[in-house]
Amino acid sequence: MKGFDAEFRDVDHYIRAITDRIWTDGRIDAIARYYDPECVVETPTTTLRGADAVADSTRATLATFPDRRLLAEDVIVSGDADNGFHSSHRILSPMTHAGAGPFGAATGRPVHVRTVADCVVRNNRIVHEWLVRDQAAIARQIGREPRALAQAWLDSTPDAVRPAPTQAPAPYRNHVCNDGVAQEHAAAFRETWEGAGPQALAATHSREVIAALPGGSAASGREALLAYWDAMRSALPDARLNVEHLVAAPRPGKTALAMRWRLAAHHAGSGRFGPATHRRVDILGITHAEAGPRGIEREWILIDEIAIWMQLLEPSGAPVRREVPFFSTTMEETP
Image (cartoon, rainbow, N blue to C red; front, side, top):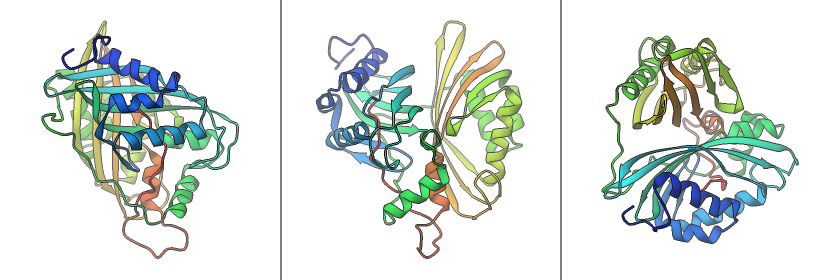
């Protein structure tokens, strides 16, 4: 690959190899080699700037989860060497909550959490990253409710600011592909939020679809998945969707899909997130899916529900405000 170390066969190999190097081998110093000094890492709760900040964040993560492993479930690649490759890396992390940190005192409990990291890679370095982790799943597995954890984070840092959406540096541009399967997937998702509702997914999803949902839960079968999205739309009825990145990657007997999206809405409906607060909610989400002859058969939906709760709550004792700033956690993953 042009501009990359000769050891790397392709972008998939590069992402998997450097992730193992940093996390499995414990070589945090390698971040300086594989992250651009000016890189930006955006999550739903914070924005890191620079390779040094990424290294510090990695150390903080390992202080809380010292045995953490990053197991690659898939890497969906697009782009080119001149403008920048894009990798959408789905990760499952087994780990033990063995140290005090943002999640509270160590509980010693085992945790499994899923993350998707979208990285722009050029000349052997990550120059930009969007990362969404299922933090509500961590909370539940250590015995905490997502709402309570969000409240604790707000109370800890009541003046933290919400991260603004970030853009990768030129010449890279977000890509929305014209592949039929990908376009149908995105169109049905838009209809779910802005049109007739989740029933639009009946045309694209298999009856036997299995979907990983936020909070560490799952939907077995299409009706269960539609019920999840129906509850989300009921809570956020005026949502507007922006699809930032969409790619289809052909695989033997199936097509792998990766979609990064943003949602802007008001919490105008009671239900999944409690009584309506009428506050604005902004969501950064990443979805992976696998489409086969019967439609989408597997799906992974990454939303940080802690970040949603933090937009609906107030720091304890604070005067009521229209919008709530985000607490900047120190728990971000490399690739």
